[in-house]
Amino acid sequence: MSAIVLARGETEFDHVVLGTFDTRAGADWLSHQTGATVTMTEPEPDQWYHSAVLPLKQGSFVEVLGPNPAHKGFHPIKQLLSGYDTPRPLFWHLATDDFDGFCARLDAAGARADRIEELDSEGPTGRRAYKRAIVGPGFRTVRPCFIQWIARPERSGGETPVCSATAFTVRDREPEKLNRIFEALGLALRATQGPQTLSVDLDTPKGKIVLSGDGQTFEGAGAMLLMAKLYLRYLAGGARR
Figure 1 (spheres, helix red, strand yellow):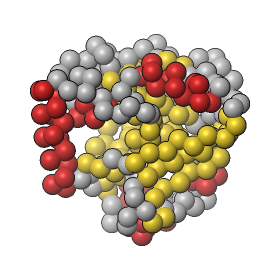
Figure 2 (cartoon, one colour):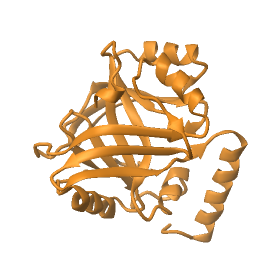
Figure 3 (cartoon, helix red, strand yellow):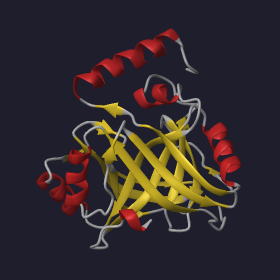
Figure 4 (spheres, one colour):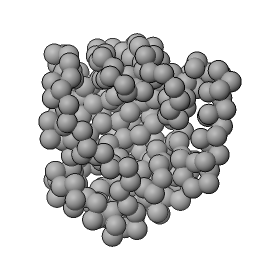
């Protein structure tokens, strides 16, 4: 996906995540749309999410993310996904070989790395180790997450990728703020004016499809209000608890 590869070659598109109320249903939907195999993975112990993967020819992938049925209790994103009737982009990741340098470029652009997380574990698909974060402050679908892989497991299920990403589109009501971040990171990608939207074009055995959806925001006072709304819905047992 050359449109979002850094000229310096140290950061590239890694994956986009489609949120869905049910991982199996979302995987079946994506497989029907593309004509390609979407591989289910086993939920990680104690994690709120369950995922499936559509590998892409570039070495990147589309991840289908839904709630883990075995997870008990409240989690805001799990409850948010329970209201998604049709899978749509929730967030996206860039892969970098220089995590600290990436953070420094964010600081220079007036942004910051939030929710830095490190993981090193063995699972059904092998060792998975990384350091990752989101571009903050807060969370917005149109701002990238980023990850430095130490050990990246094979998640294609042995299938040869038959789909490729051909375009990546970001729209936002304040695109100039996003573009300052993109420019600082060396991305060719530029946001355009409009409601917060993230779209990915795929070439598939069934032809071109567009994965697109309204963005999600957890930011400032609005994040607290949204959290309260999701928790009340959870307590009421609404929307596929």
